Image (tube, rainbow, N blue to C red):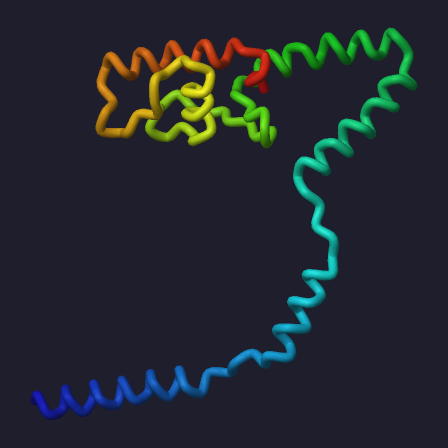
Length: 150
């Protein structure tokens, strides 16, 4: 019985090795050709795209009448007020989930220390009820700052 099992295992291993060795491989010429096409295309940065969109909207707003802009302003105010989050001033990234300090983005933790709301960036094993209450107060103060509003 063990001889039959040994023979079947050997045949299976030989088959797996055969399939791996004879697997079709991509040619090096095709790979470099595809990479050169990708590198030739200009890549737009997300910040540049956001700036272009803002630039396009300004002329449109100036063309509209005063009544239309007042209606849009009233409609846009509740949307902006409902949007909750912190914006990284250096990159423009908006973080909407930061209620749990363990999962908070690193730039928010650094901003809390940089603004002087916290003494240091706490590790997960240093968190207790007192520290978490300090962190919640510090995040509330950070939300109030114009610099970090989304």
